[in-house]
Image 1 (cartoon, rainbow, N blue to C red):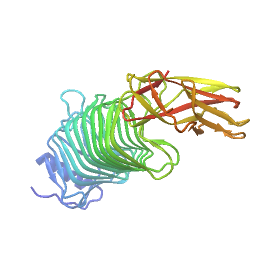
Image 2: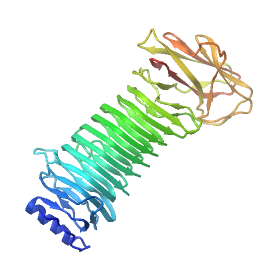
Image 3: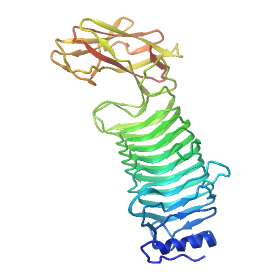
Image 4: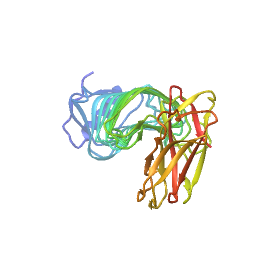
Length: 442
């Protein structure tokens, strides 16, 4: 089969017609090196294959505001290949470069058993959209000047391989969720060797099952990975540099074998959750180029629910409480959940000011942390100090030789103060240990 050569018609009419005619005749089109121009989308049907020489030598220019490749939702587009081509929008384009909408009714018409390989996508709103397909491979897909989604698996996708997906300045490098088109969950997704830089979210996953991410590199992303409602999530192998937030997770899973570099003056947590979840962690190294303390795991605890699982280091933040103008006490029942015979280590307890209005301390005041009625740690607030919302006071040990940061079943924590102006506070307690138990405040 001979290679199709560019016509030289920059209006896009001739090249589009030549490609469509060959697809109708042979189902296959080999594009030679050079600049092709199309003014309409190329409709893909079953067994269609479009291959260039390479994504550096074969360029498909889309000269109108349409997708480069589409599929008719009522026409079967299984067993298709798009390979070795650069797809370039030559004017503002608010479409996906490849937009393959499969039917959610029998007979299913998604791009199953298909391969998208060695593709560069330039200047489109988004890269690739597919739904209701299975056994599909996306290999070496690079997004340049793409704004929203690099790759969107939009429902009903099963047994999908994403290998070497790259992009900068995207809203989502990879988005895996149901869509308006398809409300069927995505299942069995593997992401290997992804590279996302300056993205809002590197990988966004919502209500998908059995998701595996292996070897991801990110820089300066707002969130590297967001997961919600995933049954079966794992991340194995990563290098992340100066991302704002490493993982925001709302489901069980495991994260292991990675290196994270941050630059924070304030204390900072790299795995965050609001729900009560299990996220097992193993062999994660963190380097801070600034002065803040880095915590591997943070849980915002707002209810009487246990935190389960093994965690290297995490935090529990109490509800905000009102400390009155005279001596007052807040008591917390500290309960290692389900590990009654174990002991745990508390590090760096902190007091957080949460009052809405700025206040000024009237005298030299103190807050003391007690365990079972014995004072263990203290924070001093001096006369004239301004108490602003969000201000954090680190507590220091009163007796450096004591083991007062060790807790066991039945211990209680109290926070007492004297002579301070009325102020709203939260107590932040961080736990670690060889075997970390499960805690909550009631």
